[in-house]
Image (cartoon, rainbow, N blue to C red; front, side, top):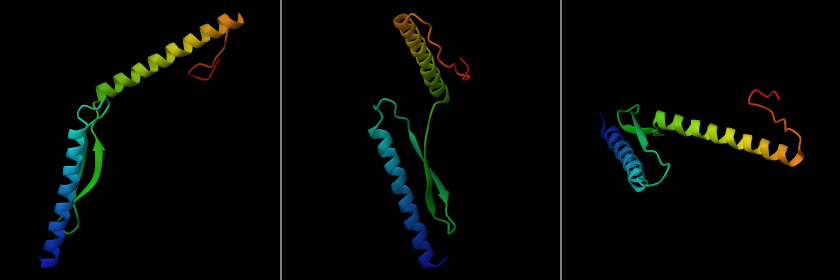
Length: 104
């Protein structure tokens, strides 16, 4: 291994380490932020043996994500029912809004 290659390996490793520290710092700074989910720096080996951060991904709990999604659908459904009732009460005629399948 030449000295130039060794310096490249060291340099890329320091850069990857700095990126990881930035991600961890961001996670710590946002620990009490509502709705924030932890980020993870994905490190890979580059062609000359050094390290690079390939991507930063967000960690999410699948069960909580499904619960939020389900709650949002439920609220949307209730909101649509409320609008139907209010409109039919005001006009005296039933309001025909499209359903999820697109049919009335």
